[in-house]
Image (cartoon, rainbow, N blue to C red; front, side):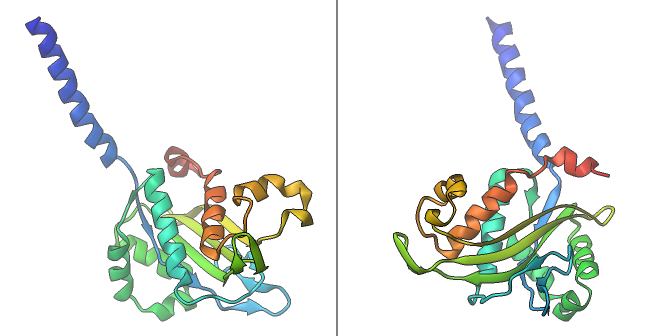
Length: 218
């Protein structure tokens, strides 16, 4: 009996040691606050400075970039893929950088900040449109409309290993019966701009690679 209890004790100690060890092997991630992208091509609309994707330019509510940053931070922490750096530390490092350089040389500035923070990966996002719903969840005079994208950079080789894009103005089911699944995922109601953004991120991350794939991606 004593031997059996000793074995159980030793197994418990091994498990206790292994859990922190596994946690420490997670790659680190910093999430930059979303940038409001104001550069646009009159013939094409707003253009992403990273992937050159185009978006319909629209209104952007004050502090909406903070809303998107918080949503992204919460979702990545919930997923548990990375060890996510607290947003306060990112903002502190960003405050010591020259913000103008992020407009002139966005990629170089993002890479420099990520390496200053000693991160393995860094997320950077751009906001093009964040228009609020006018009305209620049961009837909207004007639906919410959101356009943004996010890019994941692996810092060891400065490679973009994943990107997600969301560009949508909510439509009623009667306009497109083929999108019934999308309508149901949007709770069969008119969403606020924040709710629509959250749904959009959830749909993006359904195709998000695992950490091993992100680490080994050529």
